[in-house]
Length: 365
Ligand SMILES: Nc1ncnc2c1ncn2[C@@H]1O[C@H](COP(=O)(O)OP(=O)(O)OP(=O)(O)O)[C@@H](O)[C@H]1O
Ligand SMILES: CC(=O)N[C@H]1[C@@H]2OC[C@@H](O2)[C@@H](O)[C@@H]1O[C@H](C)C(=O)O
Image (cartoon, rainbow, N blue to C red; front, side, top):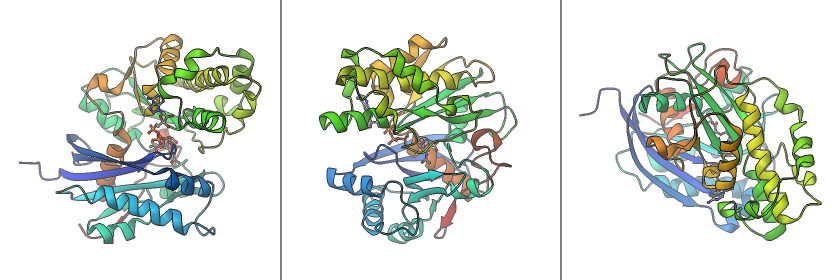
């Protein structure tokens, strides 16, 4: 029998690389992970991806969002309705724009409409409350990473790195009782990760991504371009800090003159170097770096990280976690926290003024 407050939450995430919707069940009370449940994935078709690419950068109220919104909600309904025995859904939505200092943050998809269609309570709009209170609204996975650190029984400080379209790092001191305790966490976006590599190989070769880092493996890193990239003021900024998917879109200019292999190698090195810069912000060097997100499948990127860092660098599978589903699981976990009135971010993770529980709960529990 499950403990009284443990419920079965289903999280859904469609990330900045626009590949599709990940969905995963977590049994939790929002503090401790009791068990991981089934997972599913629903890819966006090439046509759907084109529609989503066409609305990147748009804000609520802008024209031309209807088709994209309908497809995001339909894709989520399709994958989420395949799960049984779900108590609560956490729906992240599709980030289209992120500018916390000026305009806020925009995740496409109406959680209230999804709740009605699914006949289930849905927590959504996880980021806006944090932004309203002066936070970055991202990253939000750190409170879940903290629970994962407890789940694996970690005792020394460690770090999680998500290599998605954008990279984000969570440093954790697992000796603390709660993630919002001072000194328990530090989190921030490290810099661009896969998004610019995808954009490069898409523009030049019509490929979705550099599979297995095959192109980068054939090229050499051009130091001049790498140094220019590292001159970006973002890397000197103290965390917490976050990025829009396309904040570094002009990186393509830095490799414009290079051949395909050298450009891919140099961009892969840029993503790794951004992580290395980020690691310098850790209060205590972590005992290990656990890597999640699609970039862990890129051996060139992983090798560059291993060569540049003093600690072991492993995919999260090394500790029994699922690196393809960790973000979907995070939004399942965070949904339970929202439903229980627990915080989902704090000054050390997003720069918000005080710990806050972000998210709207639609539908009855
Ligand atoms: N086998 C592979 N070889 C190289 N790169 C890969 C491989 N598999 C995935 N990737 C990269 O990982 C990306 C997908 O990563 P992921 O699903 O973590 O991103 P996301 O969740 O959309 O992004 P974010 O975390 O920024 O929201 C792909 O677009 C690709 O660039
Ligand atoms: C605004 C937004 O959607 N940001 C994403 C993006 O993708 C990676 C990085 O940038 C991270 O900050 C965040 O996602 C993860 C899930 C997070 O909030 O922890």
